[in-house]
Length: 312
Ligand SMILES: NC(=O)c1ccc[n+]([C@@H]2O[C@H](COP(=O)([O-])OP(=O)(O)OC[C@H]3O[C@@H](n4cnc5c(N)ncnc54)[C@H](O)[C@@H]3O)[C@@H](O)[C@H]2O)c1
Image 1 (cartoon, rainbow, N blue to C red):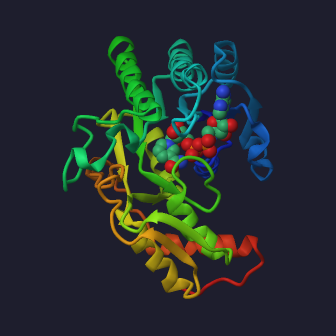
Image 2 (image 1 turned 60 degrees about the horizontal axis):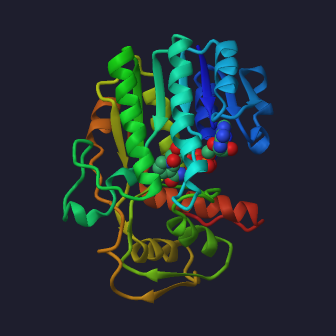
């Protein structure tokens, strides 16, 4: 089977491509930055092309040449600081270009990345888990674009009978994450490098989930012919930065992690209590224990720094 991956050389995409290749799929990746991830070891199974998702001609010509039976779009601007015209072009028009090209190419199964950001702050929901059916309270540029992407997908599904599925990853974590939410990443990677790190609030809550688990989620949902739902929360581990710091100190007793304020932060946190039972029950996915993932990140960073691994 051939899979067309847009934005495949990024943080999540490069892992999705490796999982698809491991399943024996042929992959054609189109990215504006094609050299960001090396796939030479996968030989002819993975082809990487330079293409801009905001240019319909790039999308339709590369997709039709690839003749895929599945399409996944991971290209996006993370964050909300982008100029409106630029962000709209990539996040909204780029998504439409992907869906429209898939429709024209006769590709019924498409997966795209939404985000936990659609829900906004946890305080809108109180102290309870948030499901996919809850009202979406997100208000910043990134959140509103993701909310509109979910509408775009529903519109194509309704009017063109497509099966386009959205995944709402929580706070994805991994040693090479540099865009999006990174405080929970730096809380692990900086101490692993022996560097000090500080954060405003000890009680700030996050919902980290490891990028290898997220890549597995995208791959499993993408390769399913008839998913039961059109949107899935990935969920993750609800944890405060203070508690995450304690896990890190358990592995690295000399870790220098400081907080400007010992209390507060919870009430200004984005949503972190996320119900992922839809995904877990339908796909039988099991995430590795979060503590193990923290150790994995520490040791990956230490390997890069030529430091010996920490024992589990
Ligand atoms: N990383 C997270 O914590 C997280 C959380 C929730 C949702 N998501 C979503 O998952 C998706 C992937 O995230 P990521 O962390 O891998 O992001 P990333 O920035 O690492 O990857 C995005 C990829 O898109 C490519 N791209 C950018 N503009 C393009 C264009 N015009 N044409 C073609 N390719 C283009 C980039 O070169 C990059 O390879 C995004 O939609 C993101 O919003 C990520």
